Length: 289
Image: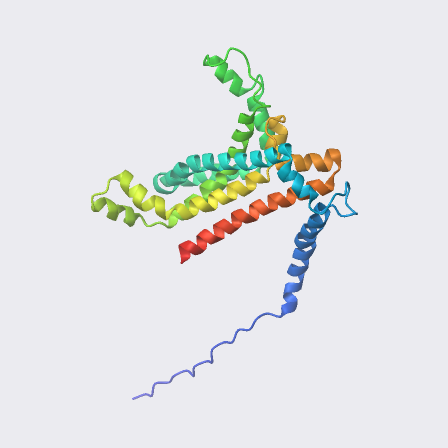
């Protein structure tokens, strides 16, 4: 009887942390292009002597809160972001649900139609909406042909055009966030609810919708933060009908040259974005716990 030959067991491979020097390029990149600009902007916003139009250390921020005009712009900025986010949820969830559960072989085409606009410049898409909303554009022509209008309406310099452009620009982020979560929900959970006597509608509201809340929250935070920082739609389509902080920052840098006040407004937008990310992380920890 031949003896069974066994291979000697190899000792477990030891892994060690890579040399800390490998992190130097990434750290330098973050310090030069992320931390340094943020600190410079924070220093500029306090009205330092090196800043143009120097004021007191907190005067720029006090103006944003106490001045009725600037506080109204801040309120309108948040209001626009909230409205766009809610509309994106209402439009994006049915589209994401259809793409994941009902589209079948058309899922790839729907996904391509969602991602394709992201490959185009936001400026080009805004100009495209200008063409559609022009006095002799497609929108006015359709409304006149249907008898809803007697003469063309200047929709380019109207808040409607700003909202429509923002929704079109940001809707893919909502759909992709929700669809990724819906994809991970097992269908047998809905089938089990149906077998226990629940209708399709009840199974959706008691099973699918609660399990997909994480995708809704993630998409809402993304849309809200990106909408707060978007100024192209208001600049090219609003005609001063919609005033937001990003638009005022653009004007402060290019027209009045008051970089100190512009820096303060930029920091306010940054705080709003950080609050949104904090809310998302808190919700994620709550879901995980």
